[in-house]
Image (cartoon, rainbow, N blue to C red; front, side):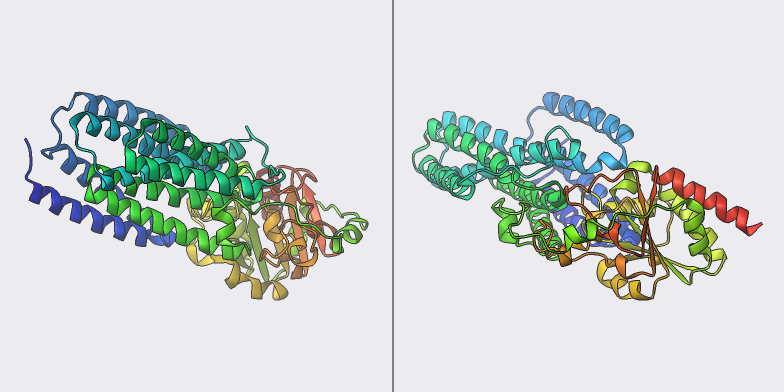
Length: 466
């Protein structure tokens, strides 16, 4: 059974509308489930319409690919932990990039044999191969950093920006030469240089800046898909690629503003490095040492508080402490304590990481506040409970000009009357920067697994209640 080109176009139009509505739904946790459903529905319609199109002449390899890929996807989805979601996203981005490269090369070989090459098609193939190759290796490096296979520290060397610029210009020049001549050598060398550029653009990025990179690679994967759409003359793929490309770029821009970074530097791999300059507030603060506290100390403060703000971070994700936090919130609210959750835009290791975990624990959406919303409340907050966060509450971003995170807007937890910091150890955050909040007079650290500690707080509160 096949459908006409007009019927396929109508199906693609419906899919495109569903994808746009899906993106709108994903802008807020309360509508995210509906957004996901709309996106899946649109994709199902698109796949069926494509398979029933006149351009498909054989289903054997397609069915085999769908079955194998689907089984792999199901297994991965069932096994993946939320803490590993960022590296899974990076891996999926790499697949999109690799697919774009393979489609470009395959289309070139096929059209060359049929004598159907032209300058416009060659330009499309160049763009698809270059963007796809950068996306592929860049995503692989991001995956390695997030998974711990590669050091999260920035890799710097002399003349880095000049080398990146040279590789980029050489890649573009080869792309133009390939588009004009159809040289297989230019195509191969162009692709190799683009693969190298993907590595050199991402390795200078520090671990703390990975959320922005994940978002930017998402944008790259969208442009790679759009380029592939032009190559395959598939309008829906062009639309979907453009949606992903623009939405990823907008999200990257928003996150860069949240981290006081330049979007231009993100694109060209020039941020995440150590800043120069003499130490300022850091050394003096660290000479004071730290104070440790017990679970009972924190409970004593929280049960008598008017307001408690919880700041979640990647440590909460690792400990899977969100459900225990929900129980703690319920008990505190029963005692008349106002409980809020303050989420930094780059908390965790990908955009929205903390919001998803808190929603998973059925913490009401109106309890979860973004940085700009909750920062004015810290001065009148009795207790701030920091659960596994680090860089996003580090006063070094405001007070220490020598810090690599200097200038990044933070959650101003240190303004609270009392701060309790849940930590496994004194190890710094993902950026490798020591946290000056540890050394403030109003801060105490509670060492141990976050989930165990919060469950201890819940038990103590229940005991106090009796």
